Length: 413
Image (cartoon, rainbow, N blue to C red):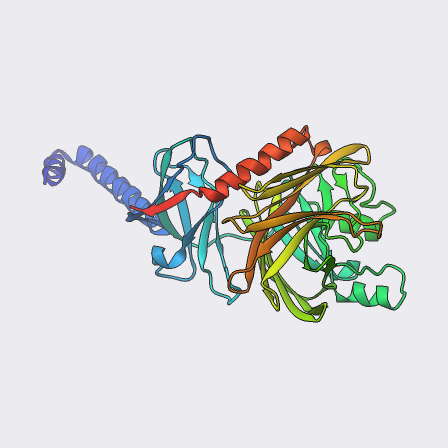
């Protein structure tokens, strides 16, 4: 009301002043219109806030929080969800993900930086999607047909690959370049940016090779028929049986927070037990460990392994928290590998040593539940600068296991 009276008084003044007033009013109208139009691009749902709580007495970062998208009630499938720290108003990097591969987005992922015993609130905003995907995400994976038929994945800290049916057939037919292995290969990167595409081009299109370190790291991790970093096996009596190469693949997501995909395998025989196997593998930003969600039928136990290579490393087993570590000399550096099993799923371990080539592994035994088993497996390379010693690597695995047992608590406010 007072604003209208203010304008009425100004309009009763002489013409020159009145002309100025009209210009001023038109300017204000234009500004208000612009503000209104800009506000249409993003809207705040004041009644939707995500509260994250850390119950541990240490700071936590690079832990992924997952929120069911149905709880956020998107009104338009083309809308982007934007999260902002309620205190700083800074946008938080997030990613929508199709969890089950049905083509529909299911979850919202983000990684809050949480203080010890602390709480943070995040506002939920919506905006029309205008994002383009012109660059390779830090969390990235793809099928690699140009190098036979690898499947490779990486984040800002580590990279991995495993092998497909063409590589298997080449090996079985005696064709040079074939690979017969369901083990997980480690690519020892020491840069934060993506290297998968670059290294394959280097190997296949130039005189260089990803087996040589030009400053970004290299592939000098031997897998063979070993379990590599987290491949599975079935123990019957004193023998471990394994699958062959994956037969099909499906990429679920690549993004700033997570890449995930599914690998299927042909049924395999473990001393008369026919076993079916499917792996859903995911890797989150900032993590040295990939998550393996194994769907398996034909057995109620399964084992995940770490290759022992020259059998000259040091083993640590923490049965209480559910993790194992293997720290070894590796060429001109040192390398740690590890497996962490959540929810008390680790029912035993086996330091399995044999004279047979590539068959010596450190195994963890897992009890399946509803034909599924979950674990995390990965590595830390000393030359990357991420870990200086065995003690630092073991501390990382211990903290990782503690965080899995005490996940960040998510509530809506």
